[in-house]
Structures are given as structure tokens and as C-alpha cells.
Length: 416
View 1 (cartoon, rainbow, N blue to C red):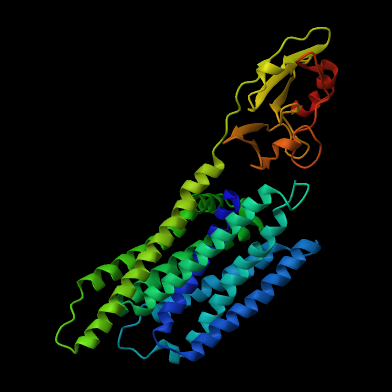
View 2 (tube, rainbow, N blue to C red; view 1 turned 120 degrees about the vertical axis):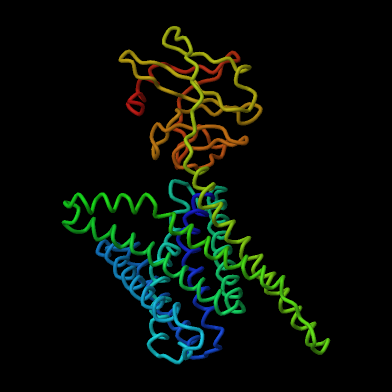
């Protein structure tokens, strides 16, 4: 769940924040011509993205780096051009929406940003059931929930940004417009510069390599700066509306203005909430997703007559128990035992066919693969398939689980 929540937020939230900024800024002019360009950019990008996703799934001829490079460069050039042609104009200049060139650049930005972001959005669902026996699995449901929440949060954030800028003061709107687009353009520069370096002989240049490493180290900082610009804009909008004084007019008009001011404060507050939520996911969420889980030390049991015996009363608490066996060549083979029901026990290696010997751990009563974070169905532990632990032959007799040491010797290669 957390993995796809993070991935979609990083992919979609900044892009929709920028598009919300564009839409809100230009919607102040109420230009239908501009709105048509926005719609055209969306539908053309949808076509490009669907075709790219289909080619990526079904062919080997589609090179994603070249596709990304084209749209990243296009978006970067268009964003920089738009910032300097619109964002820094004086207030009393002619409306930029009357300039066809400005409308064209805006459409190009919409097309390029979405063409870069949407293919991943279409491809992620095809990964949900990888390593699982069926799509009807709790882990698939969690991934769908994380994926869906990220899309909803991104759409809500983009909508709020557009509403805030639509009614903000001209000075505040222009500053927000300029900074958001510049930070986003800088992020796209890092992305296409990385592709350029990896796909050319520029990697032989030590100075450029060091520059790339520096940019990659602080790449996320550009996204955070973009989010900060939006938050500051919203806070400025809240303060200005809180301080606004309406006097000397018809009471009905005053009520209407006060209601409008409250709506602007509300949109700004929601925008801050959504942006902070996205920031927490991008930081705390990433930390939680990447933190290393330490496996509890396994218990080494004595071998008698090439047999290992585990008393049932020592593993009947419903929790995961980890044991080990050391082969003659010194390889430590880990295996796990868990009580599944009144009379059934799951006995398996602490490894699987897909993720290798990464191991499993218990989290909130669930058994989780430490590498891919897939939650196991406890009832299927001891059965083959998917990301399940590799089953280990055993028998239950005399109140003990009996394992033949030869079976562990045969599986030692998994832990070498």
C-alpha cells in the first residue's frame, strides 16, 4: 500500500499542482480559448500515454528513456518560456491570454507534463499481483487502496491550488505562478540531464558526473520547494482575506463579499492540508517504506539421529518462530514455524522462490516478506506458490514437529 501511495504521489502530485497553478492563474481572465487549449493538451497526452503504456507492456522496441527525454525537454523549455513571458509581466500589461503564443505554450506544458506522468499511472496496476497466486488477495487490495488514495489526493491538491490562485491578488498569483513553474522546470532539468548523461559519452566527463550526483542528491528538494511555494501562497491568501475590511456598502453586497472571503480562506486551508499530507508521504512515508527490518536471531536446535524435534507447546502461541540449522560446510539454513489453526502448523524455509533468503517477519499479527513487503496469508504458509515461504517437509508425531536434517541440507543453496 505504502509503496504505491508514495510512487503515485511523487509522479502525479507535483504535475497536477503545476497544472492547477496554470489553470487557476489563467482562469482569472475567463478565457474560453485557453480552456480549450487545456482540454486539447489533456486528451492528446492521454493518447500518447495509453500508446506508451501499451508498447511498454507488449513490445521490446519501446525505449522509455527516449520518450521521457522528449517530453521532459519540451516541458522544461515551455515552462521557462512561460515564466519569463507571463510570470514577470507588469500588472498593467495586456492580458497574456490574448497572445496566441502564450496559449500555445500553455497547451504544450499540459501535454508534456501529463504525457510524462500518466504512463506510470497506467502501468502500476499491472504490477499489483506480481508474485501472488491471484488478484483476489489482500495485498492487491492494499496496493489498490494506496494507489487510489494517491490519485484522489493529487486531484484534490490540483483543484485547491487552481481555486486559490483564481481568486488571489494579482501580485500573489504571479509570484506563485513564477516560483512553482521554475521549481518544476528545475526538477525536469535534473531528470532529462540524468537521461542525457546515461545515454551519451558525457559520463566520461568527471565534472559533469559530479554535477549530476549533486543534482540527484538534492532533486527532491526542488519538489519540496515547489510545495513550500504553494503553502506560502495559501498562507498569504488566508492572511489577506482575514485582514480584509468591508465597509460602506449595501448589506447584501457586504454579506456576499464576506462569504467570498470565507470561501477563499477555506480553499487555502484545504490546499495547505493536502500539500502537507503529500509532503509527509514524500518524507515520512519514504522513511517508513525504506527502513531496514532486523530479523530476530534464529534459535539453533540440536540434531539427534539426523532429526530435529520441536515441541508443539513451544510454538503454539500463534506467533512466528525462527530456527536455524548449520550444515557441515557452515551454511546457516533458517526455517520458520507458525501455528495456523488448532491442529495445523506452517513449517517452511525462511526464504521464497521469488525474493530468495531475505526472510519474513511478524508485523501486527501478520507475516510479511522483508524484501517485497507482501503480507502472507498465514493459512497458506507451508504451501508452494507466489511469495509464500518454501515448504519444508516434516511430520507431527508425539506432540513434536519432526524435521529431517537431510531436507535442510538439500535447501542450503538458497542461503549461500
